[in-house]
Amino acid sequence: MQDLETPRLRLRRFRPDDVDFVFDTYSRWDVQRFIGRVPRLMADRAEAIERVDRYAVWDDEEPKGIWLIADRKSGERFGTALLKDLPASGPADPLQPSGETEIGWHLHPDAWGRGIASEAAQRVLEYAFEAGLDRVLAVTHPENTASQAVARRIGMRDEGLTDAYYNTTCALLRIDRIHG
Image 1 (cartoon, rainbow, N blue to C red):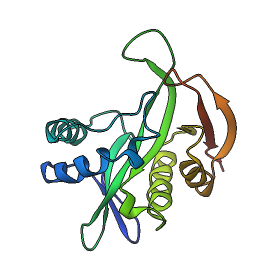
Image 2 (tube, helix red, strand yellow):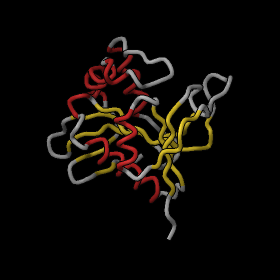
Image 3 (cartoon, rainbow, N blue to C red):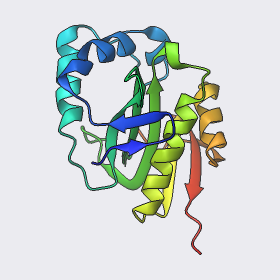
């Protein structure tokens, strides 16, 4: 997984010094309320340590990754960007890959409304297409209109509601690479 940059952002691998930021972000209901089939707050710092450790060694096939989004100059942390296998709905736990790739973002509320999610997601999407992916999907809670707006800003189109992923009903957005 390589670091990615935009004019103002650096998307980088997670490090141990990101634990407090991760705990602060994922222990907030306004962040977690649309994440997961049954949203839950991060319970304690030990859970944040486990997540950072897991994200820091992310080794899925390129171009997939989970990046910390930070300011290029100051290093201020803003959130998480991801490009990963999208789990199919089904009876097995853990859910099995669907064969599709999911793009997503989780931002700390202090970063909302500043175009950070759109800028980071656009760079991740470019990276996905540069690496040869032909299609990328986004799934959101049907009421998460803010994330749906980010997806539309990066060129994704609404595909309606689906039950095909995560064993829950999601709004589905899609973008295909234009060959040329």
